[in-house]
Length: 377
Image (cartoon, rainbow, N blue to C red; front, side):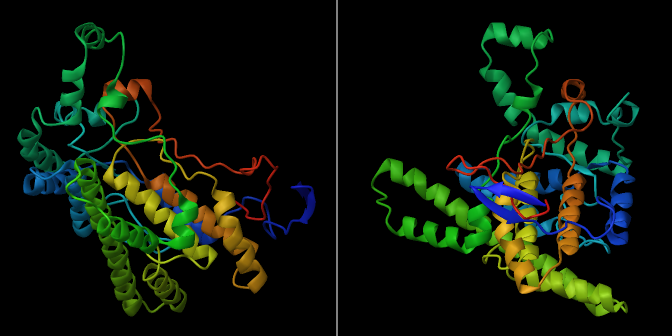
């Protein structure tokens, strides 16, 4: 098909050789497992968050949050599905929903015995999980974002909130959301570029200046997180390598070895292939939603930043359009594994377990030119 792009005519290669939208057997198996997975409330992150806050509660908030994320990434359960081409999981199992006690805990305890009785957006929870959440609850009493938010309400606003006239549960019980980070820089320069910038900026600080002292905390937190992400990626390298050594299936072995090779590189190093770019984007997108429980964490202009890698791989014969579609399908399915459990009050306003993880395709360039890309996103 032809398309006009910035007053030029571009030839598009076929997206698939077979039926459009038909999943490969690998992706169809993964899809079936994900959509049939029961959504459970997962206490693991809540327990790890409590450990981190207790250990670092007196540290500056940027550093505290960085050490929280580092502790979770170092200790959380990880796994690799047999069907997947890209790796990274949010909870102990796909579609399980982590608990974020630092944002809100009262409603979690209040609803422990009713999650499974909801008329919609049902979540399951084991007795062991209930026990773990109840054990950590006292630490979070009057010590959450919700508590601070309610304390900041003007009296009339608090009255309207208590009467149910206004709803603020989505704001005072959630973290950062409605964002799309700079994936273009991430995949083209890698986290090591940010690391270098931070190290240079830290060396130039005048710590006798109060405003620059505040910057130091942010820089320290940035380095903590970058190193934590590198360790997190290495955990998948180690797991994939271990799994590859045990499988007798040559195709499975090759895929696991490829996963290990890619994660030894990205997201710390720049991506050089389409698969590396997709893996790098997914891991950072995932980590954003391990650190915080805000929603509308989106991919931004995915076709624009992935297209150069796609076209380069097609030209070099490293990938076919069908293989690219399979990778993008894998990305979409992995995105579906992310889940969030909300209070029933919030759920009534946001039914259907939405996370609003959007991706923008087509549109215009920064100079207001029409843009269509080869990337089959």
